[in-house]
Image 1 (spheres, rainbow, N blue to C red):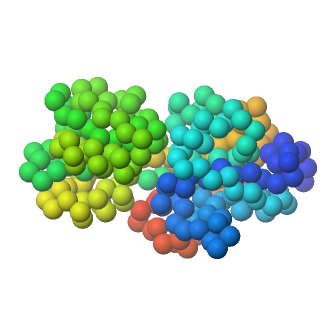
Image 2: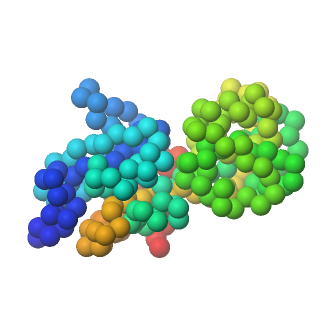
Image 3: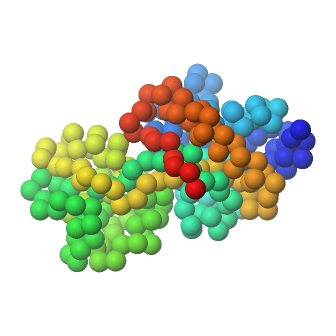
Length: 242
């Protein structure tokens, strides 16, 4: 049934799945053999099972590195946040799950809303190549972005430079707030990272197959099941349709 898709999506005979190891909500552990464990790897397993092939995980430290490798023949599918900049080189499905992105502000801050952060004079520490960082780079109009190369680096810059806000995924910011007495995670969100499945732009049939897979995984309850299985309920949400 899937002979054509299998030949296009897994030309080496296995499904090479690029996994972002820095997303602690989608990759919650590693097995004894080094394979990733979590919602994202399980989605790859499900796709491979449907195609009747094995999975080979291609591990990356950051989503930016996965996007950079889109022009190379090293992965067949990529489970990362879908962003317009990445979509220039990757064919994405709609999202299967999403993560709220917001701000952490220090003790004594007068900032009360997400909207207030984008004001003249404010400096926001952000991991620039994360999906939420790419969104901020395109949408912040008045505040200044202090760009870093990782979540830990953005936290350090926020603390050491005494910046007005730290941008990030809400679950991570909640943990960061525990280490900074008086700091607060602002209610609401400036965006939601849309976790999707990508493949090469020229793989049209494969893109349609992956979209159908995502639609069925959401409507059939599979995504919700995986969120519960890996203990990230309340931190990951099943994405809406469209």
